[in-house]
Image 1 (cartoon, protein in one colour):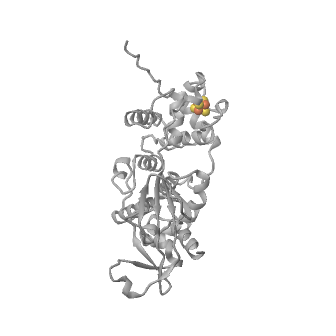
Image 2 (cartoon, rainbow, N blue to C red):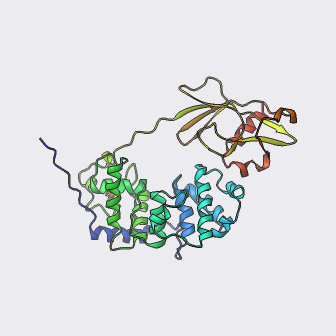
Image 3 (cartoon, rainbow, N blue to C red):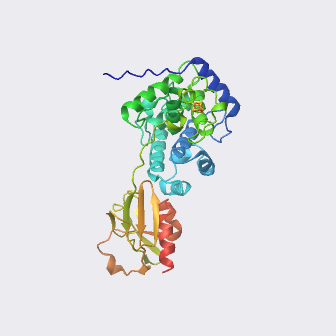
Length: 340
Ligand code: SF4
């Protein structure tokens, strides 16, 4: 027998209204939520928010914007001077792309206003492009982040694998519907805020939720089942033996083509290998994205010029390492190596 197709009822105007009303009353006064919209500030905040929580982002955002208050100031600053202001946030390719795109926008003297235009710039994926075009320019497109996916799946009673392309496209169309006949920036932020504050992963506050009248998961008592849980990607195991070489107070770095993270950033020389099992001997583990890197450090060595003939080293003072590579990894290796 053929399975009956489930019909999902889309958002009602009454729910759009209740949600925006709730948002106006309950939104947090975040530093990027200013009356006068600044597309550059919104963009920086959205890139940072992809990697961590609102509370963790605030101090990084404030420090970054204090230093680079305008797009021009970011575009005009060389990347090594920008990197220290991203240090600790992780996902360092994002700051490189942010800087690249800032330069392009500044050169063209035009900030793209639609998500399709924005997606042509380095670092703009479907999420960031829609977030900037709707929050800064009111383009009528929905923003689908993890919070919104959770709210929508529950509201619609959507029990499918939301991470798959077809299902994601369905959810994108649904969230797009929320942005019609209202302020797109307001409703997108309201959905994200509702997911952060009320429709949380565990113990959502349904009785305080402005959408509870029509929420399928609430009505059918299926909140713990929706959204479906995506299986976590297993962490890759890597073993890295960095070599700490000094010459005249400068440390040797080499462009990273060995570790699977921090690609093209200068790193300490030394081979990295992928392994099935963790090594028995190591000094510490550095976890980054879905990689666990087991690190065995060596004592620092001084090098004479004749040892260096074949090597393409970059030489950096230790105090400038964060300008070469914003990750804390280098500093960690150095402190272990100095204690040997
Ligand atoms: S009623 Fe509960 S489950 Fe439904 S959207 Fe609101 S908080 Fe989420």
